[in-house]
Length: 240
Image 1 (cartoon, one colour):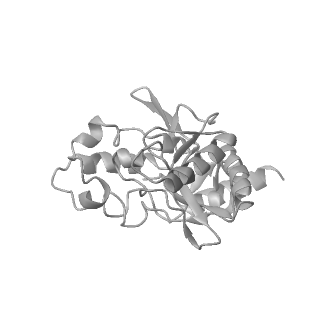
Image 2: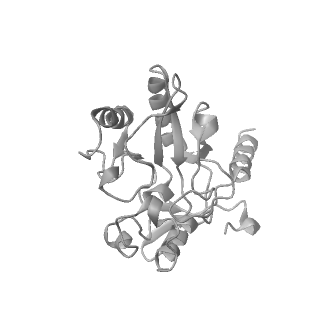
Image 3: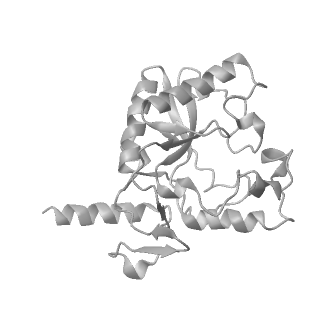
């Protein structure tokens, strides 16, 4: 939980060789930085692979570092000219949420969302295959999970598989999807790459800013708007 008794302190601590920070000063609300994005923050809701709201998601919002948000705005501008909007499933992810995932994965009895998100895997395989880990690039603040929304059709673009499905169907180069679905994945992938984001081989929706500003720091503050509003207020007062 964020330590409200030290709201003015930007604290960075090292634990087991990893830097953790609760400093939100270089983050922005994605809906302000990229005003036409659509938000469907899955970890605030219950339709996700755990089946409940995840720790650290106190509001249905998306945060990114300022640098990553500016790059995403450029990608969004290009896609908007082609009739698309970006739909965001997740962006900055507090370390508390990652720990929540770890604890869930260690409970073999909790498999209520297996049929929807990992039907072909046993829960213990989620660790071995890298779907669950003690650290996530999302916690560094420059990674985003997203898809395309077709404005003319008024619906998400068909990517041939859903967000957070654990399996080969989610690999960007999966051969078990149609040509149109593959082309949709490549449209998203190549646009994001042109604007400095790098994909991963396991998830068509996952992109990290190549030159991310915090390569070795994992942030701990919750997804809560007043944190960024406070930082913005303090910045304004400092500039007077």
